[in-house]
Image 1 (cartoon, rainbow over the protein chains, first blue to last red):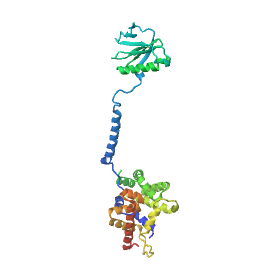
Image 2: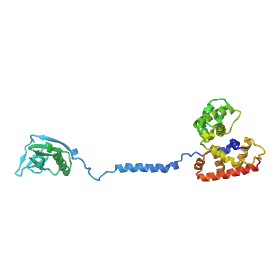
Image 3: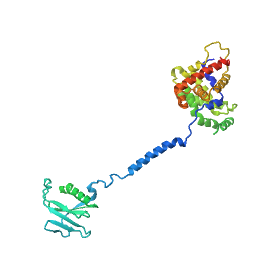
Image 4: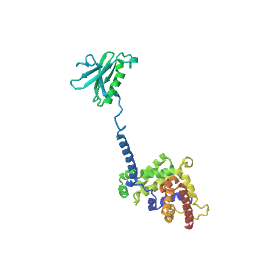
Length: 167
Length: 185
């Protein structure tokens, strides 16, 4: 007998022994996949929840221009502007009823930018959605859709500082 | 399709039998032949020859387990091809190791009275394997029928490779003793 014949003789093993030795295929088991599936779903849920949470806890910081709708160069403010003794001009928007107080001062604050006339302004403290600004003797209406005082002031300042100075 | 239905197709000389056999057992037969030959082209040829051999042998054969039937055919074909090749130089598979391990079982004593027909020897080895624990017996078959690697067996049985090697060595020693006691060597 040699090793080859011995190897060949295994061909004549009983079938039931050969079948018994077959590797058992893993059947899909619900329990086997349950833990990985639950872990995956937990991760997905966590990501969704975290992304859905409001950030900052308050108003988002936005560019002022988002609230500012535009700048009009106006030659005529339309309704009569009145100036009181302190140089405050009040303007009443008849359609909205908004009273805008604009204080015109000659200022040095922007002299370095070349303005000769600077306007600072005081606006209605309830809502600020427009203000008239004079820069270099030119009157501008700056308007926005801010719904709070601070934002309105911030937005108008932003427009004046970044846009009107180039006029 | 169940094995008995496929076998019936062979008996009816319906060529669908080959198609069904191939669909069901091609990968299985390929694996067995690859373990022996370690060459994809040779394996494909062996597998194709297996279907031809099966067609030519059924009938008159009516195997109970078609799977085991084709497994033995492909194994035999693969081993014959292995011997025919200059495989000692080209083959990097398990066969050199498998055969060298079996050589331990063969008595170096040349006073072998007679050679046992492979079939009778196979039956004897079957009896021997039944005397082993089920796990040891299965491991033995996986190694010397399927020519699976030690690593693959270890993975399959979830034990270390060293454990597999030791248990196979013990089984080989026992087989040697058994064959000597039974007069086969």
